[in-house]
Image (cartoon, rainbow, N blue to C red; front, side, top):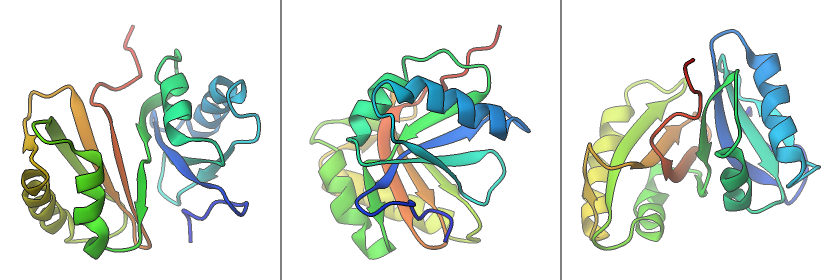
Length: 167
């Protein structure tokens, strides 16, 4: 199970994508940035190329706020993990807890190793965002990320803009 954190009481806090072929450097880079906030973080491979999960007992928002301010050469993007779900039946409640009435969000759905679920997750998410009083807006700077893995679904609300800056 690739998304299992190594210590009891820890949970996935961030999902990190790396520039192609730079996983080891990316792992070191995100670890260096987060060390001052949470020296006990562990970066876990997901089983998918250049996709990592940061596990910690620290509050995910604390880690995300620190991580999004870093300068990176190998980290491509950082997504906070606000909710970890075991199935689609939990999706509506999770979205209602993250999307406020009147809020506009851009929706991003990514499936890792699970075929044919992205369109169903997208359809449900749009419906549930509407039920929460929010709306889907492609121009919003805030993204609701839904990352579907075989054994879990990660949800996070954060900036849409990638952290990697082209020079």
